[in-house]
Amino acid sequence: MPEAKLTPPGQKKPLWRRIAGHHLFLPLLCLVIVLLSNLIKTPDFFAITIQNGMLRGYVIDVVNRASELVILAVGMTLVTAASGGQDISVGAVMAVSAAVCCQVLSGGEVSVTTFSNPLILAVLAALLASALCGAFNGFLVAKMHIQPMVATLILYTAGRGIAQLVTNGQITYVRVDAYKMWGSALPGLLFPVPVFFAIAVVLIVSLVIKKTALGLYIESVGINGNASRLVGLNGTKIKWITYIICGILAGIAGFVSSARIYSADANNIGLNLEMDAILAVALGGNILGGGKFSLAGSVIGAYTIQALTTTLYAMNVSSDQLPVY
Image 1 (tube, rainbow, N blue to C red):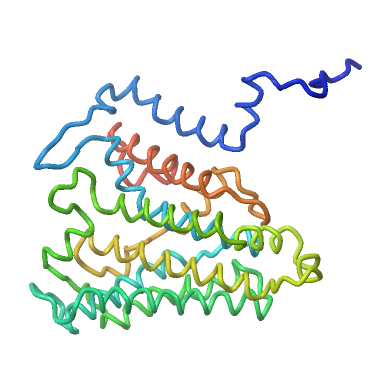
Image 2 (image 1 turned 90 degrees about the horizontal axis):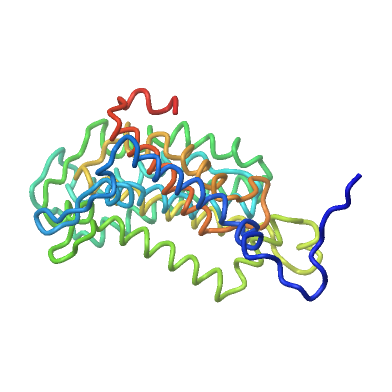
């Protein structure tokens, strides 16, 4: 049999091999293929214009519409790395967050044109509710040692019912410009506001992971929980923290999603996004069994999914056929 060619010691690998061997090469390649496929069917896909003081175009739509998925993918990455399982309740937690936020803003009314309570109070209440959801999931996984997908199936099933209870079974509308702008645009900004939410989440979580030992702890617990315990790491606490973070990020995504439609629609906000978040983590080259992870890969995976969705819409594929692709 022919011997494999090895790079001699002290000699650098060829550039193309270093590029192809990078952990982000395949995720980026998938994204590029999806984007470039539009040159054949939709030549104006990359055209960008300015309308009403905002950038418009298919590419801008990809970046904008992927914002919630990017936020969810970041939380899903941490949960997957630490527990070796996935949180399938994040879509329902988004609905709970949106319901709490709109209910506080509306003061219990079905539709309002002015805030009944301060926006900051509503946002904090929404994030607290989503953090509690994450803490509940973390308790089941970390303390009760229930398999993550089974544990989070509880809120996956009951979460939207909780959101319905919060809103009394109604779609709560908050028709206030100061609320709508968080899902659309702020005066003077060319990019939609949700894009900045996604950027902020990625930067903050990346800094925390890089500048503290949390990232190393998460990987250690995910790779070998018993070994990490023997060296003094509290695996239970670390897993619990990742689920709380995942819940809070789902709450942020729920706030952004409700601001887009200035309402709390418990049946549709975050619907099926948990599956897209898991897919984004996988497309990013992350191991779904836990351990080493790449936030950048998950973010690229999220944009790849949205790029495919936007591409299909540009090709006039109906929304009910999108899941096939």
